[in-house]
Image 1 (cartoon, rainbow, N blue to C red):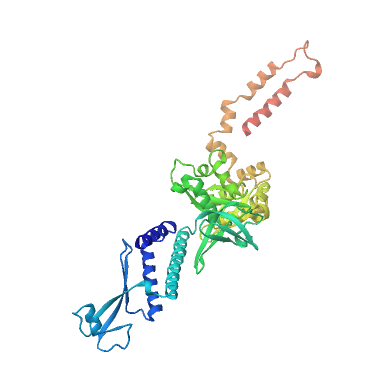
Image 2 (cartoon, one colour; image 1 turned 30 degrees about the vertical axis):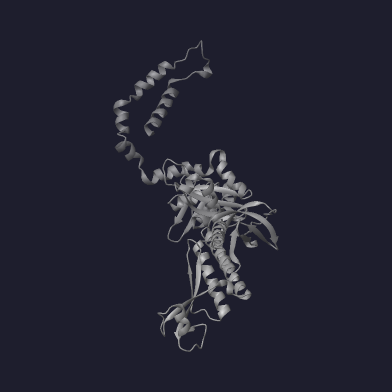
Length: 438
């Protein structure tokens, strides 16, 4: 009988992962319960059990008295002497009880106590097992729809995917395998109650950890996640190793890694950007794929003003404001996006090159205010107009030379094309004056 009990305990320990010590404790408790049902009391009952051989003995302690009033707790001196002659009045005598003497009801109650203890330990073990997986992902098999909720089998226990944690538009088929994020594990009288989610942003983080070894090892760190389940997700990543490209590691060769995650999320788009400690740079990255002209970020107020080209405004805001909304969640900043035209009208943006319609007008105004022509030529350039006219430039000699060079040839030119010396002298004088002005 002891060998059979030992074998049964070993099987239960392997199958249900219940410690043999706990099972032995359950048997001890069941024997005490049986004694109480059989005798009406169990205060003086003691169970002695060997965990190696599963051999057990049940003893009932009785006090030696002259006249017995309660046979459950007392024994006469004569009967005590029959057991051992050394017993005297007031001594405690341990009387062994045979479990075979228990009635059917007591035996059934003892059995129920053992089964109850086994069930409690099973529930406890399951709770501990899945409690350790809380805030992690698991793979489940779709069983059936319960109204708008879905029952998911996780192996040893069932989980509930509520309507609020389902992605809109997702439809599951029985026996379909899906990835789930465990939100909470509650211990109940019927076992652990597990709540799972398909919409939580941490689901994306765990999927990247399972697909990207650099993320799992900590080389690449996911700094922030913003998600609108079923539509789009933005994640900001940072590499702790300068030789590792964070975005490239998450994307994988030919997009293999990120595509596996997108397939698991049923086509949900994922934007992967580079994290930057500079809020302005981070906001610029977060608004991708839109191009940004300028970002003015207030780290204390957590606000930012962003200017984008006119043709990029709709892309920066996104469909129904999704791109700007996700960028705000990702960075933690309240972002105000304006087009270049809107920013200029509001006075929030100044561009040196484009704020003057006529560049020549600007140059003329600038020169008139800050420079004097004569002082510039004479002082800065070392150019003296009077000295040039008197010493360096002989007007008459040049005029005569020009007259000789341009003297007409009657065989080559007609009267109408002839050039006289007076006009030539006048032309060179004008050129001389223009040269001095320059």
